[in-house]
Structure formats: structure tokens, C-alpha cells
Image (cartoon, rainbow, N blue to C red):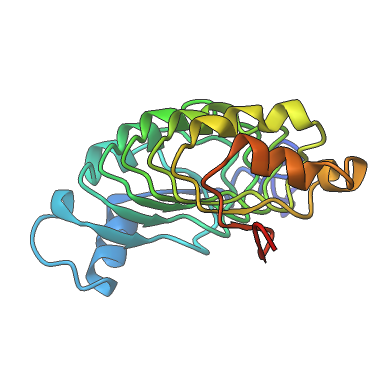
Length: 195
């Protein structure tokens, strides 16, 4: 019908309203952050609330970015993010991510926010030994085994997991399980470990 937006996959914006990341949006974010010089050298970018579904150009345009905020968009895939090997802080909260299998390539990452997505496992996050802070609350993680890879995060200090189905289904043991596999943890779900 005329005047009705075309339909996109469930949970996505209509195809004619979907936003692709453009060089202009990137330049605007760099300018707001006070980044001077070539876009390729930008270190901090805030691309939150841009209704983005496609961030394909990110890897080519800003390979040196260290702090990237992509919260409150419509991303279902991490796309080129694993190619951004200089990242130390990454916010992908409030998106529609189903998996993060390739995130383990971001070996310099220290802070990762994946809250409010559709994750059922932590994927390759366990391949991030330098990770210190992880937010994975409000996802669909239901099984303790889906959290087992976190034992590879040998520097993990702060973890926010609750609420996830695993916290309700395994209420008596999830806290102890996480503390056991992440011995350096100082804080879990806002509580100090050891108190």
C-alpha cells in the first residue's frame, strides 16, 4: 500500500527508515567530541541514539578509535567492530545483538557494555584477558554453561549480570559459580564479593 513503510525483519525498523552509518555522521560525532585532524585518527566517538542498523564503514573510517558508544541503536550484528583493535571501551547496550562471537579479537578492551540485548551466551568474551568491567544484564542468558567462558577474563573486576534468566533459575548458586570462575572479581551485580 502507498504511504505505508515497507516491512523489515521482526524487531527492525522499516527498510526505508533504517539508518546506515555514513561518513557525515562519523564526522559530526568526531566534531562533537572535539576530535581535531583526520577522521581516521579519532579516538572517541559517541554514536548513540542514531537509529543505526548498519555500521559497515566503521572499520575503514575510524580504525584508531579507542572509546566507542553505539548504545540505543538497532544493531543485530557486531559487524566490523572486531577490526577496531585499538578499542579499550565499547558500549553496545540497548541494541538487538544476538551474538558476540568475534568480540574476542578486541584484546585491548577493558570495559564492555552489552546490557539490554538478546544474548544467550557470552561468546568469545572469554578471550579478553584484559577485560576489567562487563555489563551483560537484561539479556537472555539462561544457562550457567553459557557463562563458563568468562573464566578466561582473568582481570575481570566488575560484572553486572542480573537480571538474566540464569539469575532466577539458579538463584542459589549463580553468584558462587561466577565468583569461582572469576577469582579476581571485586563486584558482582552491585555487591562486593566476599561480603
